[in-house]
Image 1 (cartoon, rainbow, N blue to C red):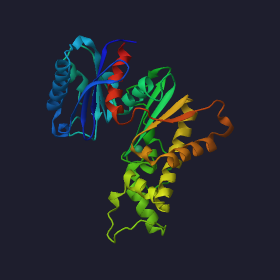
Image 2 (tube, rainbow, N blue to C red; image 1 turned 120 degrees about the horizontal axis):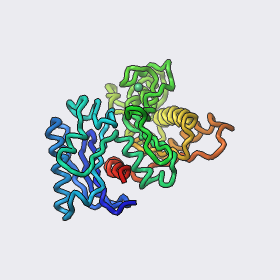
Image 3 (tube, rainbow, N blue to C red; image 1 turned 180 degrees about the horizontal axis):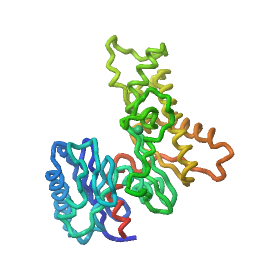
Image 4 (cartoon, rainbow, N blue to C red; image 1 turned 120 degrees about the vertical axis):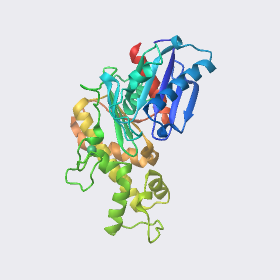
Length: 322
Ligand SMILES: [Zn+2]
């Protein structure tokens, strides 16, 4: 374990977080910007480099005090080349060599990875996966992202896009079409992007809701928070949709278990705010399918890092270099 400082940059859809962390994962300092999505590639690189240098100066540190700079970004990343293949969070950035562009501002190494991989490594180093050398992290919010730890290392596959469990197909006959164009991907049926459609279909099928919906109800308002509020007032429709989501996530975890035999699966993301009813049903569906094929316990746990997992995960990537 190094005694150096970790530096992380999390490029999110709404905020750009840049942070310095102690080697135990605790914060030293952080900058959060909300204007980065308006910037082009060169401007964003300048903003990232400027933030890192500002944090170093403010905390009387030098580049060499850092293990490196870890950058996490949503989208498909060609890890070997440090290239963003495509991301829906930012304008442009098609096949953009972000790692090298940031690297031109620094002598210490820069590492770029997908945000879910960064979060997985953060949970492995500092969160619910500590000490578990074989772990899968799933983040369930608007979409589903994942990261795989095998024998204590991030598993990235041949080019770096491994772990896209959100696009594994769990319901081929589903009418829900994924962002990838296929029907019945796990993320198309189970998470935030599916909720407005599922809610509307159930209303049209005559299912009962105790929520007071206006005549011209805008179904795009149905998100995780909306259903959580429904759950809080015992709305049967909100509860049914939450259990449906849990069913598909449970199936997804079963498929992961059969493929990778991890010791622990760590769940994060906004939909975890649905709480015990959600997590317990995910576990039930998993155990119902694993039956007597489960020779050793598989722990299904909730992220311990919480809201800062993006930037902590990005910083943790630099520990791969130590
Ligand atoms: Zn898909």
